[in-house]
Length: 48
Image (cartoon, rainbow, N blue to C red; front, side, top):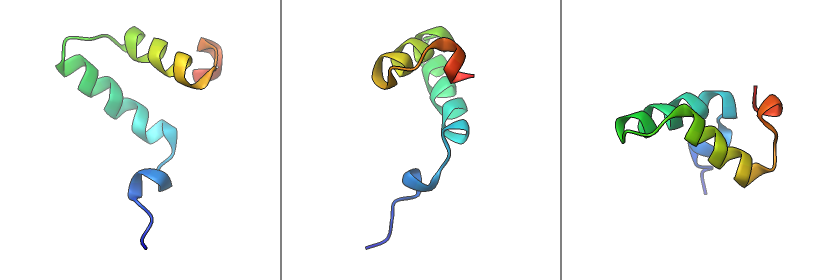
């Protein structure tokens, strides 16, 4: 079975796509960061 391409992408390549989608839905980059921090346990400094 072929591996799905999302599993081969680096997070740095996916992050801007999440931000773009959030902004299309009238959300902010800060909200995306907050959710990612909640899901991963990373701090804001660790995200950048």
